[in-house]
Length: 399
Image 1 (tube, rainbow, N blue to C red):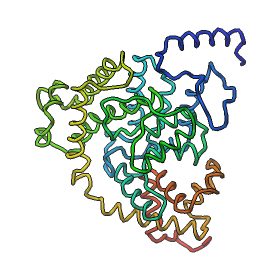
Image 2 (cartoon, rainbow, N blue to C red; image 1 turned 90 degrees about the horizontal axis):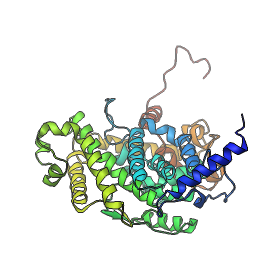
Image 3 (tube, rainbow, N blue to C red; image 1 turned 135 degrees about the vertical axis):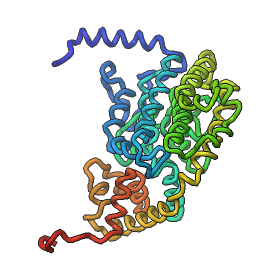
């Protein structure tokens, strides 16, 4: 059923009134830029940044979030965070902050939902291993934020807006900044320059205030959650908690070991309120001095006691062997044009993959992108198919 024009007109007026309430630093819907050009789009029912969020959710890469590691790989525990939950948490936190600061929530949601799409299997360990393999094959390093843009802008060609792609590229929640100010120009050359800077080992800040909010929300979403998950899977114990930073104990009001059971809830409440209070009348998105110091100390604690834990990384060498074997095998499958191999079936001949991307990419780049897009479970499945001999079911008929 068509919506009457008179109704659409009233809805457009209502939306215009809402945009008048946005902060001067907020991104307006009319400012969107797409590679395909500034074609007329439905401005009321599906504004451009809301449309981008839909395109991300319906992408193949987003579907694969469901079985990608956040931190704890090879752990059979349904109560810990996987990548799909992390991006939802980051989106919720960022929209809460953005709403309080009168920013564009549609833009925030789209950036948050797409920001980790480029993560490889086994989280940051997989990223580290794939980075080394890519450098060995002469195609530069591997960074998940660059890969997220590559998946959405090239591999699937979702035609997302510049503002969303920039926010995804510049999210870098692993780097701690007390304050973030917008950076760059609203054009595609500026995005390319930022990507080159990041690929060269540097950093780049978002083009929009909304991108800055997502970058902060990314850190907030995993700090307490990773600690809570580490306690759940017993990567850390009470002895580790004795080394928890004093400034974090003071800021989050931790009064005893039992308080760590609610650490994530406390972290979210304290840090969200802190950013809103610090940023509301400021020209940047920022933590207070006290909160910033605590976030930095919290990240260092998690790095030492969780991410570098020997318990977590006990299968590291086996995983490295798997990555190297699969990279070589998949690259060989492409070189030998084995069209029944997984890379052909699931990527090169896939109807959703951009032909322009496939025709232009080097063979090692195609290998990188196929592996980076795998879920943990599919990675293991392909490895088993490559390594284990195939059993004959009763008779050789049909071989």
